[in-house]
Length: 451
Ligand SMILES: [Zn+2]
Image 1: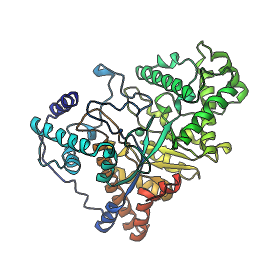
Image 2 (image 1 turned 180 degrees about the vertical axis):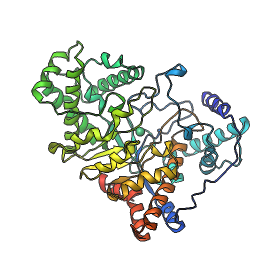
Image 3 (image 1 turned 60 degrees about the vertical axis):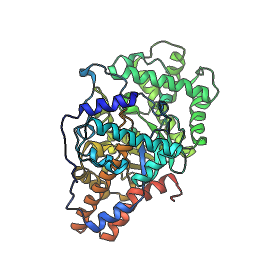
Image 4 (image 1 turned 135 degrees about the vertical axis):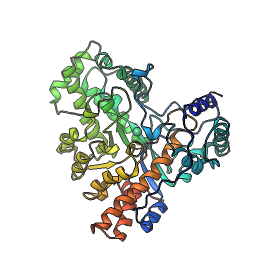
């Protein structure tokens, strides 16, 4: 019932009646585009939900409770146009996923649509998430979640866990007060750290940094690996800028020991400890075979600091010789710093995906971003959707995954057509690059079997 009410409120937000329309991409090479649409893709970054019964809720998907803050209008971030109820693309999505037969939507039709979706959920049960992948043409989806659950099983879903909670073991009140978004984020971080301690059977934070590293940080990462994770993700840009320094361990040992039992660490000292922990976690991830994902570029939230999420801030991390065995993926391609991302692709251990960009910008603009990367390192570029929950029955991870997969195929076709037309590659090479981007680069990086 609650979902029906939410869906109806969503419907009432739709202020215009729009016709069904196909977005023409007349400039893409039709033979190439047809080949691209046949490729079963590997989604490098998404947040799918577990299979749930009616009235059940998935509570294990996020580390930070993004979007939990900002009750007043001035505190809320604006929604990108493509995700707004006014976007005429929604009809296309519902048509493809749920067999929606109308060219417009009204209250009765919204109820009908919800029923059609619920019917599939009931019918498919635990197979529902995999059914969604089949419908969209996704072979494997990397599921970035705190925990996995019903229906999110390998090989169709591969776990990408979170690591930020290990970076913030001291009192976070100072940062929480910095901006209204942070309050909820740090509360989540502290809760997840407590859970992580339990997971590795440690009753409380050890008194020394060395013990924290060996009894908590490394065992937590090893447990993630043991439980099936293929990568760990940092959402750090939501909490602080990505300007990680390389402080000496003697300095940060003192900070940890002085404040682990309480007291507010000075901001610069706590930052140094976080910087040290970030590099330690990245090094350990590399050692045990976990790829490191880092959120870069734009983010959700009224107070998100885009400037602090520029992938160029990570250059010293990428250049750190002690991290040469760690492979990093610049998640969301750093957009709007896409050119900076292109420059980072020349480093052997750095990849990028274009997840999420496809819901902010349209295929034509996205094709320019993708082309600028492909011209430098086509074997380091990966497709991703960043499909996530927004809480509306009619617009959720399934719909976003469809939209972003379709847009990405269009954008890739446009980018490669441009490269063909300019004599940079042949059509045969273009098909090969498309397969790499949509599938093979990820299979190779994560050593997936690639069914
Ligand atoms: Zn994401």
